[in-house]
Amino acid sequence: MRTGTTDTQTATARKLMGAWAIHRFDDFRRDHALLSLERLPLPPKVEPHDVLIRMHGAEVGDWDARVAAGEWPVDRSFPIILGLAGAGSIVDVGKSVVDLQKGDLVYTYNHPLSHRGCPSAHHNGAWAQYMLVPFDRVALAPTSLDLTHAGAVPIIGSTAHETIDDILQVFRHDIVLITAAAGGVGHLAVQIAARRGARVVALARRHNHEFLRGLGAAMTIDYTEADFVEVVRRAFPTGVDKALNGVAGETANGVVRVMKPVGHVVDLTGSATEKLPDGRVDTDYAVRPDRRRLAELARMFDGGDLQLEVSRVAPFADAPSALAEVLGKQVRGVVVLGIR
Ligand SMILES: NC(=O)c1ccc[n+]([C@@H]2O[C@H](COP(=O)([O-])OP(=O)(O)OC[C@H]3O[C@@H](n4cnc5c(N)ncnc54)[C@H](OP(=O)(O)O)[C@@H]3O)[C@@H](O)[C@H]2O)c1
Image (cartoon, rainbow, N blue to C red):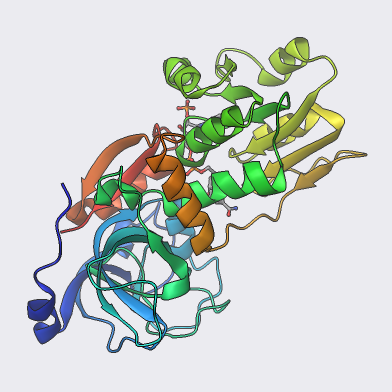
């Protein structure tokens, strides 16, 4: 059940919030103590184009470990609050914001750690009780999802939607291969591609096959039981039209090898080294914050075109274990951080 925020004044008065932060860049896999749960000041000021959100849920992805490792450009000082996306209720809006108001239940993907397009150093991460975000990164959350669950959608949803619809332009009768199909991006991409009328071939371990067929996959392959390259080539001797790859390493090159010469691969991991003579292998895709896409995703969830698989709502205090679980690469759907 959704709840409005009642503790704004109290929190603002003490001007402190719970937040997961880092004080240096390092490898989270080696040192889980890199992340610390702290009482940190709320963002000091809501600028004219900002909204302040009382967070209820935050997305957890392997990208959070990359942020913690310092793999992306950062133009702010430590402590840095982790988390790039989530959902909550608006508790304050800047004076130039006209289409959002206090009490709106929203979700957002910002990239406050990059200097690209982030106007204020006060914008903070999503793994916190409050998140300050530019309004143009915010949309109304799907009403059909619990607000905590909605927090799991922005990055995986934007990625699946942009790659399948805009970049690969999947349409009727395309044969589309999706790896990491049971994961966050994958399980949404399978649904979007199947809705467009494509014949979806999904790579996943056997225990995920029924789940994926239920989402619209026409064919499922257990990559642990057989060489998927051989299986796909046998099934489609002339090759696959389009592919979305979410598995790093040799899988990425295997995907390229089963394509038609004019095929198109989006490799989310950027690890494919093989090329297609007359086709495309995109290795530089980076999901962009886009409120119109978030609004479209909300419409798709609310219209019954998409369903979200949440494997676990991790308590806020368990953020390191949630991130470790995600890095284990065996999650079906998503793990989301629940924030109170
Ligand atoms: N470039 C971008 O902007 C961008 C945006 C979003 C995500 N990404 C990247 O996309 C990738 C997928 O992310 P995600 O969060 O959706 O999922 P994920 O958590 O990386 O993947 C989880 C899924 O991967 C499957 N899996 C593990 N090993 C596999 C293998 N060898 N072959 C096929 N499936 C395998 C598992 O299913 P089984 O248990 O069935 O194997 C599990 O359900 C990540 O590398 C992520 O960083 C990039």
